[in-house]
Image (tube, rainbow, N blue to C red; front, side, top):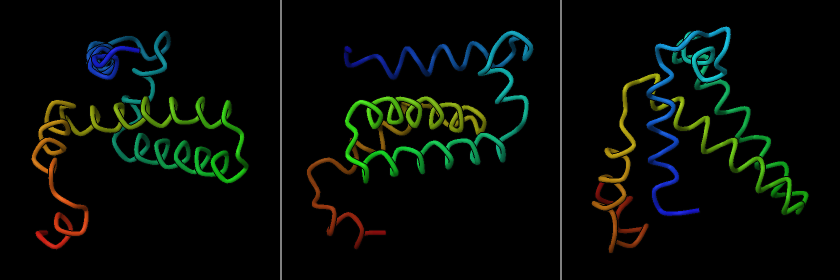
Length: 104
């Protein structure tokens, strides 16, 4: 994996926004709207948590990939660019989590 794997995936998701929902899982998810993409993200996050608790590294890896994909789909459904998320992470860099939370 290279550093731009998520950027490539986000671009692919963006390109599929207008694809045929009969032939693209991404287009099908996006066609169902932001509420459904958020629900699907939540389901995948729960599955990842379950595998983390179970301690199955292989299944956790698979579920984590699903979580990242569905997070990007959810962001796309609300027109939030991955670049904006990266910018927010960069803004927080160098601050402790405690300091960052106190600033909100």
